[in-house]
Length: 425
Ligand SMILES: Nc1nc2c(ncn2[C@@H]2O[C@H](COP(=O)(O)OP(=O)(O)OP(=O)(O)O)[C@@H](O)[C@H]2O)c(=O)[nH]1
Ligand SMILES: [Mg+2]
Image 1: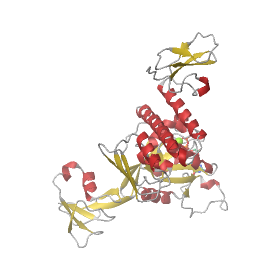
Image 2 (image 1 turned 90 degrees about the horizontal axis):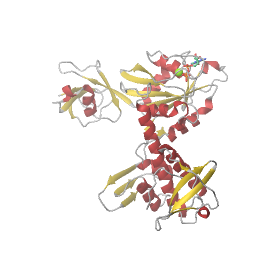
Image 3 (image 1 turned 90 degrees about the vertical axis):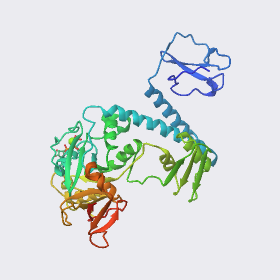
């Protein structure tokens, strides 16, 4: 069998165009506007031109890897569109969707590598959490960064003022929250338009995303979340409740405590396509095809999002949207409207809690706050303090919230509580 990597027809030739079965390898030759498909028979090992009666004098075109991947993506997308969805085709579509997701994941990886070293886009994460400001050009991202932090990102009334990543640090309730201002995101960003891939790759590093628009273009939230989705981010979603235990042999075994609409074979096909060979899979939610693929994809990120509408000062009072709208917060970065509310919202969305370190010689006090996430244990608190200090610490004494009595001794596996005062011993 002749293997010819990197040679792909722009669209697959139909069966009629090939005098031999489709399983044959095909090479593409181009001669001016004419495309001639040649097939090499694996059995007879000789080549022949499929489209007859053409005088040819052609040169071979080797396509770059990314081009080939793009063509594969297009071909699979077309096949998915052309295949009617019903029970009998579901497992086939599942396999196609999974291989499509795999190809796109590779694209994201390539973009990540490509942008990592690119000037201005590689930013070191600092502080207790990183928040990234995403939005179209000129909606006030830099104005907001400067309002929330000590940064001085350039502000101007024209588009694409910001051309690299500008960091700032917001201090709030003892937490240091890094905020990153990035260039404006435009439609088609996930395909690389306007440095879109680099921006989305910065977004992937976020613990929280702020999607910002202004009162003049409020309808961009969907297009931005769709760009994020296409780059593997799942805004405001929890990971699928699916666990996977890899095995050495035995194939794929599925347990589900919820009745699934997707067939077993579909789930197996998707898992296989995404590189799982032997595993016990436990499913505890009703899965859609998207969630099924997400469950087995490595590069998905589940990031909380805050939706903001800026420049609310430009609307008259009667037009000003209701402040109780919990899903979107209306602010003015320039006129300082609702900025305190925003700080509190950022804190809550980051799921932070604050406990206090009590040093050996001290009485219980609130002088040394430490920020961790809700649900984390005292071990995490200890780690945050630093290796040198934590080396010989085995237990903790606590006061305040969570303590049954002052100076209660507890294990380091205990969950920390907001307001807990902790001395490690
Ligand atoms: N009225 C009003 N204008 C604002 C507000 N926030 C920002 N602006 C103005 O909007 C324009 C754009 O602000 P920037 O902060 O540069 O916007 P950006 O989103 O960072 O823009 P790019 O970096 O180009 O993507 C400037 O003229 C700001 O003065 C606001 O709350 N109200
Ligand atoms: Mg800017």
